[in-house]
Length: 207
Image 1 (cartoon, one colour):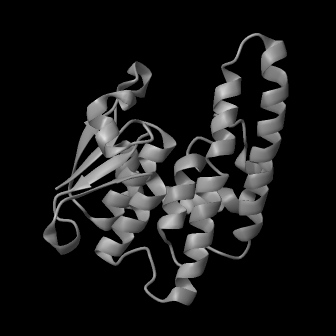
Image 2 (cartoon, one colour):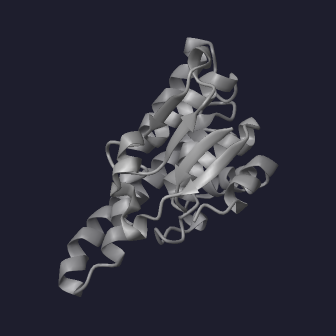
């Protein structure tokens, strides 16, 4: 039984979706980031950066317990552990790694800044940051839309990269992005939503 320390955020949803899709049993331990619980010493032992999610797998490598922080690292670990959604062949794995890193480095931090500046007052302080990060977020949606032209998933077969990207696309309305402008992303999104594992990962209570 994997212990998942998380909250109801895009990065948290990546992992609940992956666990459901991989059929791994898990227990949720909410970490209320609104109350700064991510900075408590007990959680910092698991996640030194003070960010959710983190997992503890009591049946880690060679049967020994292991803890992992950072959502991208968790997804790679789970893919290795189960042999699912992460190709063993290096040639097939390369695009999975590329698009997972694309999400971690851009399609997460940029819309995350949109979330921040939408809540900034007064207007004069909000305007520049919101304009800058909304433009970059839309650019990234465009990159994804072009990638998905003629493809069902970003790396060919469905992979951990799709779960990572989906976690943030799940909040597209909060980014003020319409799939009408990015139809390939919209089709990909609906394809994922229709999967029972993804649906369960979205429905499970994380807070």
